[in-house]
Amino acid sequence: MPPASRSTTRLILVLAVAGFASTFAGRSVEPLVGVLARDLASDPHSVALLSTAFALPYALIQPVLGPVGDALGKERVMTACLVVLAAALAACALVSQINLLFGLRMLAGAAAGGVVPLALALLGDRVPMERRQVAIGRFLVAIVLGQLSGSTFAGLLEAEIGWRGVFAMTALGAVAAVGATGFGFERGLSGAARRPDFGTALKRYRAIIANPRARILFSAVFIEAIAVFGIFPHLAPLIEARGEGGPREAGLVLAGFAVGSLIYSALVGLLVRFLGLRMLAAGGAICAAALVTIGFAGTWQADCAAMVAMGLGFYMLHNTFQVQVTEVAPQARASAVALHAFSFFCGQALGVALIGGALQTVGQIWALAACAGAILLLGLATAHLLARPAPRGA
Image (cartoon, rainbow, N blue to C red):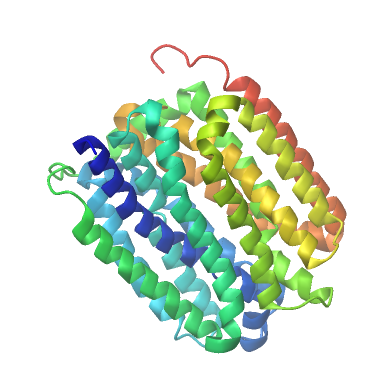
């Protein structure tokens, strides 16, 4: 294997461990909504906002972590964030009040915000554009496995180890990631640390946002996150309300999304070769069909099958957006990816509240039909808009 290939493989493996731990922590709470509501004497719709408590700080920290990562070194910042993430998750296992759990999930979300976005920026720095989508697709396997493990293990093991044990498992995953990044990054590649210049960062952000292609990408992931992820924390209470089970069934349904993502990871090379940017239109259509299926509130097995399709469709959209955003500002990739993550997680945080309100006012069918229409139009529009050549100098 050529030295460059070995270096890229090593980088992907290290980033994979970190990405797994971050995503595992984020997804593990969703199957536990009903159990946490009962044990901590709270309303399930309120407990579902624990996902927002993780996602919103994840989003809001991005404009800070972008320039900090560019200045101090993405590897250093990622390792520090993983240390904070491990501590916050360990504390979650010890709480007995819902308000304290919300606070710790916010801290964990802010810390997790320094993992996947900086990992994508590192891949943008180290992997040539012609190989980048496949490299990001390989890294995506770890993200997907984190989603799969977080959703499935949390639901299946809650009966054996309790929700406190689930949080302890997420903390152990973060500790493993600290070790991987602390010892796995190649020395000397991050460069000398320098003082973050937030004045320059603001100018850089203005320049990035002035790029029409960047505005398309940031708007797209905001809408995408609302339409796809808004329903996730509400699935466990909905399945329980239909009398079809509890955390176990909810975990299996949520795990379907990760299985679909793994299918995407296996097919990414073929999809890029044969579809190119038309993958966006196809992904939007697949997600729309899956959301409509879930909207009709059949069995949990049908929901699981729909989530498999939605995982495939979502990553056909999202991974294409991620690759495009790594070229928006090649000299400030961490900042560009940070704005991208900011838009995505703002949408995810808002989506949970919006879909929760829609479920209580217009019902499951109409709430998810609206999401299906939005994601279908998004896929068609971005396939058309991003097919245009990027402006010179952008």
